[in-house]
Length: 368
Ligand SMILES: CC(C)(COP(=O)(O)OP(=O)(O)OC[C@H]1O[C@@H](n2cnc3c(N)ncnc32)[C@H](O)[C@@H]1OP(=O)(O)O)[C@@H](O)C(=O)NCCC(=O)NCCSC(=O)C[C@](C)(O)C(=O)O
Ligand SMILES: [Mg+2]
Image 1 (spheres, rainbow, N blue to C red):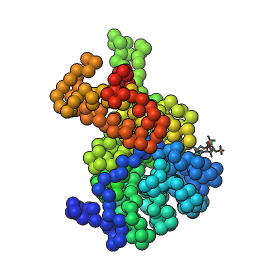
Image 2 (image 1 turned 30 degrees about the horizontal axis):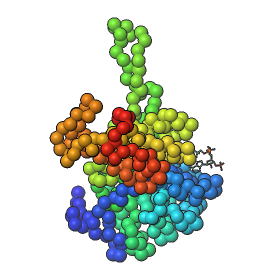
Image 3 (image 1 turned 180 degrees about the vertical axis):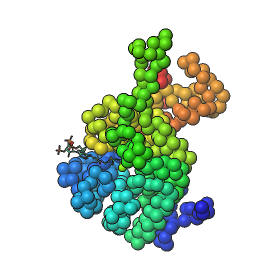
Image 4 (image 1 turned 120 degrees about the vertical axis):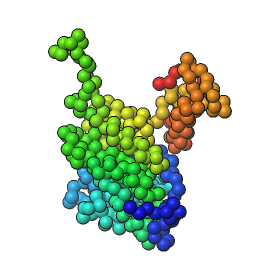
């Protein structure tokens, strides 16, 4: 397989296209909120959501009826044009879209329409059912041609949904396929079908996927604890490693049981703890869950600041509350402190909470 040279990697793929950015801009994206631009009721809610959610995503793919594909595409253009505060580098809320699958009758026209019309405001294009680097290369070149033609000065980024077994097998090459790559999301429904998993849900657990306590005293019919396991742990962990390797961001994905806000929060929190930066929201009530879970708690930030203060120049080992802290635990705490700073810069409520913590984390309790 041939690869572009290191220097070519950061040259535009079309004459006149903007140069690729060396780093993915670190913009908060705790909730990627999906809406169907062909649904008048949902579309009407979008302008008022600017500033209340990190990402608004106009969905053109699955969950939009085949008969509504054109209306969704045109609706997204109209919404962006009528809502000048949405999207682009200065907006508090990024504008993303999920285009149709590359083998569908709609994907080409999705990009041919959106880039000239609203390309200056479109931050990220999410590509579904990505199988390998070849899918990213196709979108990469096409976007460069369209950006050049439209005279855009800022490259549109690309986000891949991992929802086929082949996509998971190729996850590293997908992440490294282009400097446009912004991140990855899990597509648990399509992925489960493609893998022939025996689940019928959109994300979340399954009561049959469990580990059972050993029989007590050899009594196999006696009372035993069971522990439900996370079906998505393996895939999320692979995504996190692939994304961290390539300097891009991993996200959970959809949680389809809208009413089960408790299990939704658990699933999101597992992803947060494993290294994901955000998740999807399908219904307005999931935005608050995502914002809560993907923002470090006051206790975590206070503890992290205490460790940073106690570690001085960051080397050596100290005892804090009976626990050893060293260079490596300091690095974990810096991940937390830096995330808190990024979020405080865009979220006044969080800023107030974090600002109330003393700089050295003192007078606050233990790690959450
Ligand atoms: C679940 C549904 C059907 C419940 O819709 P509903 O109307 O029954 O809900 P509701 O509770 O009655 O809604 C209350 C109000 O909120 C509005 N509303 C409701 N949702 C939204 C929204 N998202 N954005 C903005 N507004 C929304 C709704 O229109 C209503 O407005 P109203 O008070 O004026 O009557 C609906 O929320 C919905 O369609 N959500 C988006 C679904 C979606 O985008 N699915 C695709 C992503 S998941 C996926 O594709 C899988 C994946 C990754 O590919 C793979 O795993 O393979
Ligand atoms: Mg899907």
